[in-house]
Image 1 (cartoon, rainbow, N blue to C red):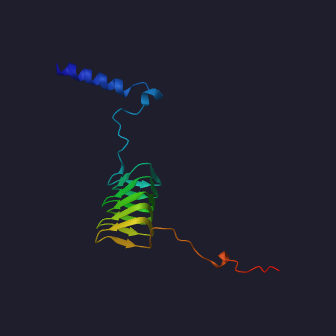
Image 2 (cartoon, rainbow, N blue to C red; image 1 turned 135 degrees about the vertical axis):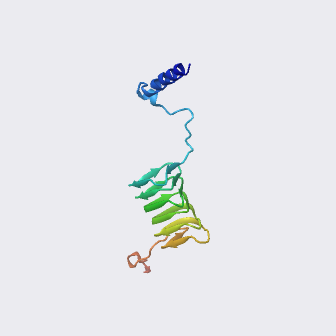
Image 3 (cartoon, rainbow, N blue to C red; image 1 turned 30 degrees about the vertical axis):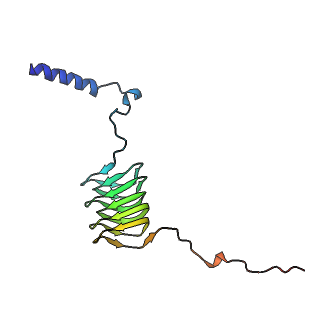
Length: 157
């Protein structure tokens, strides 16, 4: 009886494993959740750019840039050595990078940022470290001597 069960199970598995590989058979599964976040697990190192159209959690190491349309979460063991651009971020780990967050940057007590940051809003828990320049809010426009204003007045007769 058990042998028959395993034979049936094996044949069903083979049907799935060796299914025709045409594109119509490779569709998205019905139970696929598009709201899940991408994840780089502890012990994983990624070298190069990481681009995500949704949120991402990093518990491993990224040597390169992280561009994310959603939220970036850096866990306690997470490390980014590069550039970070995202909508919002929660940091518990270490960022050795330039950080650009259009919304809220939230730094937990174990967070360390070594680099310049430009953020819309900032929340810092006691114990977090920021080692670099921090710009909040609006944009900065530089003024130089080449941007002089013409103050001459024309006389009319």
